[in-house]
Amino acid sequence: MMKNKSFVIGMVLFLFFVIMAAISLVWTPYSYQEVFEGAALLKPSARFLLGTDDLGRDLLSRLMVGAQLSLGIGVLVGGFSVVIGASLGIISAYYGKKFDQTMVQIMSAIQALPSLLLALFVVAILGPGIFNTILSVTLVSIPVMFRLVRSAGLVEGSKDYIVAAKAVGASDYRIIKSHLFPNCITPILVQSAVCCSEAILNTAALGFLGLGIPAPYPEWGTMLSDSKNLIETAPQLMTIPGLCLLLLILSTQLISDGLRDQLDPKLRGRS
Amino acid sequence: MSFSIIRLIPGDPVMHIVGERGASEERVKEIKKNLGLDKSVFEQYFIFTKKALVGDFGESIVSKQPIWSEFKVLWPATFELSMLAIFWSSIVGLCLGVLAATKRNSVWDYGAVTLSTIGFAMPLFWWALIVIFFFAVSLGWFPVSGRIAIEHDVPYQTGLFLVDSLLAKNTDAFLSALKHMVLPAFVLGTVSLALIVRVTRSSFIDIQKEDYIRTARAKGLPNSQILFKHILKNSLPQILTALGLAFGQLLTGAIMTETIFSWPGLGRWIVKSIEARDYPAVQAGLFYSMLIIVVINFITDELIKIVNPKLRDSLTA
Image (cartoon, rainbow over all chains, first blue to last red; front, side):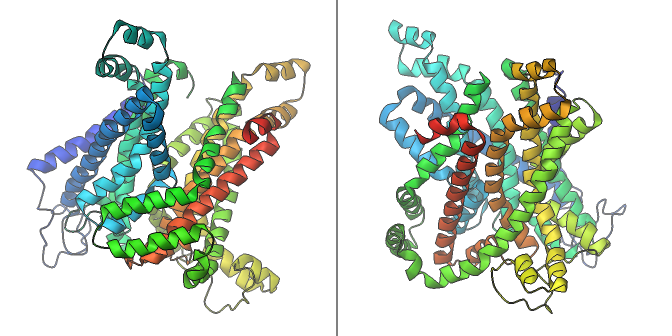
């Protein structure tokens, strides 16, 4: 595992943001909400390491708290997609028949639209907010996970050892838990990292369009959107949150690439 | 083995279309879901459901006359932009992908892989801001927003400003329209570029390992002939599938790009109508987006059938 270059680079980047978010839980240079009078749009200095935004708030503090949000949502959505998408996929593959058909129909209905567009519609209907953002981003991440796990489950489910387990009289729950699930773990792990990165990207995109996590939370996408009109006067407001976003998404993608290369021996040697 | 893989790949878009041919079902499902989610606008949604049902019989578009006429003006803008984006990204993407695959482990290869990895991770809206910062604000080469400078008055014919201005033989207007389009098209094409580079590279690498390529080399065919006649031809289905996918992404990308560049197209219209809580427009936007995706998938499938005769039976069956 440690020899896989993309996994290691991804992990290092990811840990950097985890540490950043963890530190921000206990300490930030200033409060992310604190407005300093007459200190708007300052250039980076010793007092404000990365400068201040148009309201006079410390960029570094906001960036650190923003890491909490992006990471938290990414990991949460990755987790939800495993819990909901993967378990539905396995159950669907195992039981088949009506349940399977209905699930496939529902999932392809969700997938009929590009994910961001659907998330946008969902948020537009429910109204912006942290909870609704997580809900919409989770919703769009489930179908891909479902499909992958279902097809993996279908392949595994037809193998002899499952038939044998059934013949021995193992319960459905036991077969799913101790046979199917462990054997489908590779696509689940890889896809959960992908879901995480898509969730971060979609959350930021929603924020950028003004439909994400509302103020005063310093979500990176919203920060970018606020910096849109200040490109000339304070470019660091635009470059730094965007760079953080890019690196965080890159790290999760590298992790998923690394996981896939490492866990799937068939793909080893290709890139 | 590779035969079965190639057979399997286009299976997915087909299923997509089959799933969507019953658009009435899915739309109703979608709307039902919305119904369950939001009770406060229940009645409004009930009306839309009825309209949508009518729409599926082909009459709703007439009853939603204003939205349709709005759509008619907007879609050429998005179409023009997307076409330019996909045009440059597929050409550059193909060249880079081929270069990377033929010179494996060279600078080109690593460059292409890095580029496509970063391209995938790049938040489009940030990329747009960076591009604006460098090319529009710092260098001042290109305008930041709009489709054409305001002083040009081009008679409306196709709605595609590039075509219209050429038809009117107005060179200044053509240049102005082109200048306005360079940045958004560049940004919009980046995502598809990443995808196309990656797919081209990996399919070329796969096919290079095939027996018939070795046979061709053993026969002493010149490299260029092997590259274009054998490898390119056989990797076209995969590349076309990727192109179809890229088109789907363009729709999402267009939302971002058009919002940032104030491009008066479908994407910005959707965002605007969402912001204004203009539900009929949002509904229509949803419907049109699905329609566009279905059409794109259909075209991709037809194209794949043309370039790969092996798949003709399996797709029609």
